[in-house]
Length: 288
Image (tube, rainbow, N blue to C red):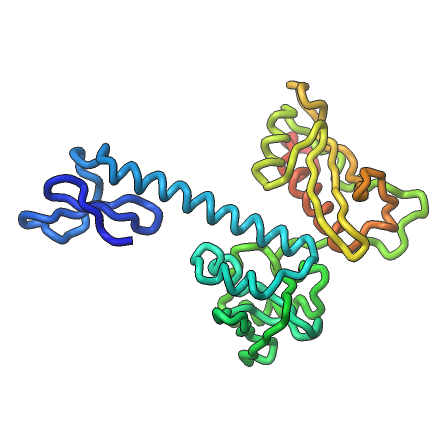
């Protein structure tokens, strides 16, 4: 976006998310000013740029949320869609450098570019840039990635920074043989908070949904969609509260035995429970 006239002697523009001004006359002509002059702060063009900046922030956040959802859903994304949104800087900055898989699940690599025709340019673990043209691409959850440690080490060599946590995302592996009747995890239960409101606020700030007395997150494995739930207290209770056990529900709302919880759902549920528990009130001098 170029410079816009904002009254006599000034122009304004949006630079790195903030409105800046420059003089068009006098000794300072053409020079960007350190702050907005008083006479242009309420100018319609300044207000329009501020609203546009707010929209860009919302759009960028929505792109991050959507790509994160693609990753935890384990569902293929049409390559044509990736090519279509790649031209948008907000989308491109989120998708670039994510590990993607095309037709061959063994050929994972870092997405570096997408052509308008839908050809993906991916850097594989051999350091080679390969060109892929699959009908759809997946953004695997890290718990599903073979050679995750190698990918992390290679990412460090490349200087990769991912906008969506993928290869450095905290992961948990489900025990191989949970008890037959087990349907809940108590590892992160009992985290005390001074108020239920504070715990709910922590959940939403971390990106989790609060529904009734639970913090929840959705995920998807080969067996279908699930919802992980952690009890956080009665909705209208304003006193102290504690985190409860972690459980999983199936698509129909039925409680799932731990044996039926898939790897992505398990990892994402444990990640949520751990993140909530980490914000608990710890008494001074008490072991944690």
